[in-house]
Length: 136
Image (cartoon, rainbow, N blue to C red):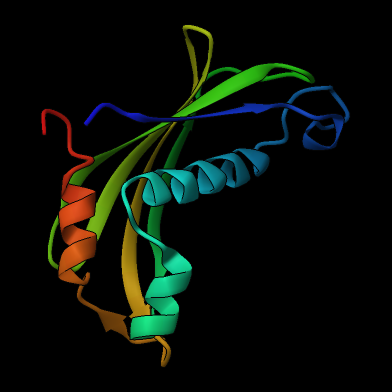
């Protein structure tokens, strides 16, 4: 599968006093993109929670801020899977402005039960996330 792409426009509320996107708002951008990528892969998080009592949680996050985005920029967040195991998925998420990489993030996602305890990724979820690996 090729990278999932999610396009968004930077609004005034996303920027700081200097007129650039506030660093924490990139986390919101990649969260939205991750939700859309999971939906595109056939993973309905609401159905997963209702049916199996399983939810996703971010376990680890590494972000490299390379260049700023500004008010009214149109950005594209690209999401791919880097690794999928029985217990976690590592996703690569990049924020681009045209052909300029602005932010690169590695996100480790795990599943939790309603009790907050870790769970293995359900097999259909592993298979769907595996389909997001490059070259598949």
